[in-house]
Length: 313
Image 1 (cartoon, rainbow, N blue to C red):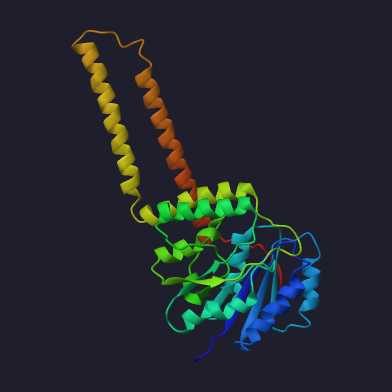
Image 2 (cartoon, rainbow, N blue to C red; image 1 turned 180 degrees about the vertical axis):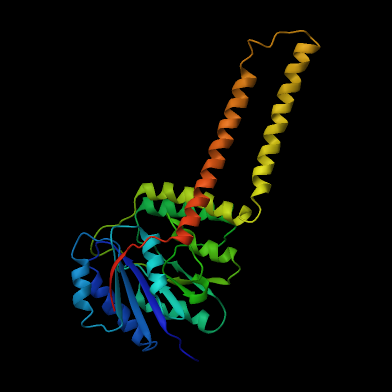
């Protein structure tokens, strides 16, 4: 079996206590698979000594590549920076917090090497997270099933393995990294799940916040829009427009009948005006939101922000 080059991509924010052990374990796991690999750590604007530690670790690990972002840009931007630098034919995404086992890399890449899958999603066993995070994960899983039709149990971006070509032409922003697997499924790639280990955090604090869940839900709506209407938005907006026109026509006919047939006054009736006003304002806000997102998407496609400050190779 030909063993292609493997790129491990791991975003890190204030993980100074975990980085040395993570890189040590990851390098050891990869050496048992192939000697052709690289470990890419993306320092997402850490405020601790993470970058200084990475500079020192580079002396011991020639396969280490470190990317430093100018500020904290979030996991989506960090992953995109890592994907853009990855040279491997298989890209494995891990978290640098040691809650995932680098030994599972072999389990993740095996279905790809056998030609059984394009993406392998790690299904974390006995997740060592708080009740709140588990609850949010359950809600996200349910929403993914309802909105995107994804039946995978664990759709997190890591620990996963991807054929490099599956990551081509991606333009993710916001919290859309959480929907990478659903997006790739939508594109027609073969995705399977394998069980992987999950450990409690030893050092540092979780970076997950409730506000990310809200932002993630809004991003889910955008993903759903692009999935269903990116090539045919007229079906969505046309349907809404026709519905509003129909409702307006019904109200107008009803008011005309009151005036012309029954000779009743309509001057003091504010409900039809209020309904029309709310409908118009609502549709304006909806269209404005979609157009704004399209503009942001076009901006990121054509003029990506230079967020990388420096790279150690």
